[in-house]
Image: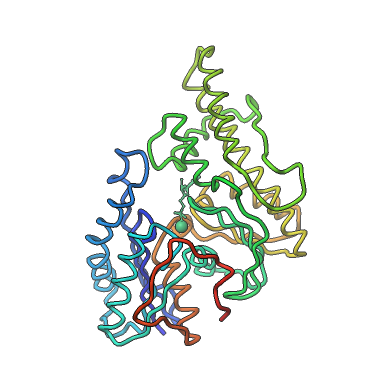
Length: 341
Ligand code: KG4
Ligand code: ZN
C-alpha cells in the first residue's frame, strides 16, 4: 500500500509518500519561518493562509519529482490534530478532497503519533515496546508504547513544552524566531561551568516536567549579569549554555527514570527538540550507562514533516482504518484516545 501524507498543523507544510514495500519514496517540507519571523512567533491566520497557497503545489511537486502518478496512491493521510485549527483545516480539507476524488481511503493522523513513529523511518527501526520522549514546540511527554495505537502517558509538562521554553528563552536572549535552533547555536560558544541553572522537578519522584520557571530564572540571571559584565556577548552565550544544559539534563534524568520504571531498554526521542545535538549526546551517554538503546529520527524528521504523517497513516490505513467524509480536525486530542491497530 502506498500512502500520501500531508502535514499542516503549525508553520510547516509537509508532504511525504510512504510505500509498504519500498519505504519512503519522496518527501518535501516548506517552512513558513520567513512569514512569521517579523512577528517573533507563529501568527495562526497567516499560517492557515499560507498552507492554502502551498499544500496542493507541494503535493504536485513531490509526486512529479518522484515520478509517482496520482493513480499509484492507495490512501491519503493528513494531520488532523492537535495543532492550530485553521492550519489543520487546510490539510484535512485537501487530504479528504483528494482521497474522495481519487477514490481511495483517507485517515486523520494524530500529529504526536506521527512524531512518535518517525524513528521507524530509519534503520535500525525501534521494535515495540519502548519508552518515548516526545519533545516538540507544543508538547513534552513521556509515553510507554507497546504497539501502534497502544500508548500510556507516563508524564508530561505541567506548563511550557520543552520547545516552547527554548523559543521563549531565545526571545529573552534577543534571538530571532525560531528560537530553539538559534539558542542551541549560541550555546555552542558558551562555558557550561559559569552558571548552573535548576533542574525543575527532578528532586521529587514522578515523570512530569515544568519548564516555565527556567525561563524566569534565565531572565533574572540575564538582567543581573548584563548590568555588570564587561563581555556581554560571552555572558549571553554562557547563559544560553546554562539554560540548554538544564533542559537537557532534566530530560535525561526523567528518561532514565522512565526506562527503569518500565523495565525497558529501548528509548525513542522525537519531536523538534530531538534535533538538539547536546540532547542527543547526553541521551546516548545515559543509554550506554543503562545498557539501553536510543532511537531518533534524522534531524529533518524530528521537526514537522509529511513523511512521518505518511508513515503513521500507512500503519493505520493498511489495517483497514479510515475516516468518513464528514471528518473534522481537532485542535486538542489526547494520544491515548487513539484506537489500537
Ligand atoms: O515538532 P516541531 O517541529 O513542531 C511542533 O510540533 O511543535 O517542534 C518545534 C520545536 C520548536 O520549539 C523549536 O524551537 C524546537 O522544536 N527545536 C529545537 C531545535 N530544533 C528545533 N530546540 C532546541 N534545539 C534544536 N536544535
Ligand atoms: Zn510537531
